[in-house]
Length: 228
Image 1 (cartoon, rainbow, N blue to C red):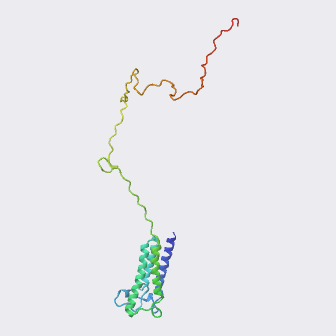
Image 2 (image 1 turned 120 degrees about the vertical axis):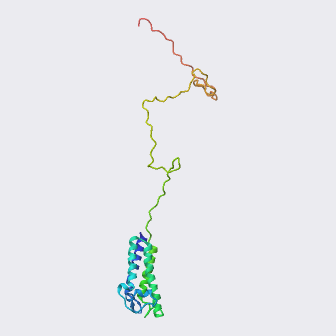
Image 3 (image 1 turned 180 degrees about the vertical axis):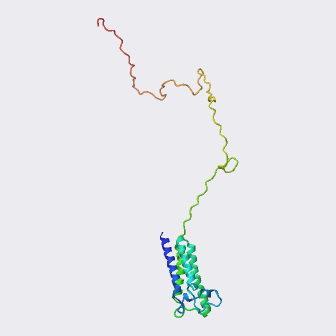
């Protein structure tokens, strides 16, 4: 979020500086709005002839500003970088043509003035904004899940008819299960003797002096005396 705000501010500041530069003096007190943009593409160089506003250096700067606004809205680093290249490119091209016409290029006094500085500053701000501004988030592409193949090695299709299902016969006989034949009088196999009750542990020995309790015997039955 911070990079988006900072990049947008840098881009808008660069666009304002670029658009404002033609209204400042570029060379020898001559404003950029009075320099014909057609002179930049001729072999003669910059001529002293005047120019209309939309036929001067204001035209490429305005186009770069519109590209900057579009790039900020779309959050496109490429569009903003293109706007910065346009501003710097036309500025450098004008300097080459101006040096070709005047056979020299000086700074200060009757040389380069504040209009050139605004144009260079605007182009650098636009390039910096293209670096700072984060790009748009790309949608995530998830891998396609593996589709199981048929027995023939082809992908299953939903258009294929399913094999016919056979309904169950309600009058069919129930399934029979065969039980193993067991002989109740057969002798048990070795290792499978039946359980014969409690057997004391062979390793258990009673303590010396231990006497088991005598078995309980009920008293003999005495019939009641007669007369009762």
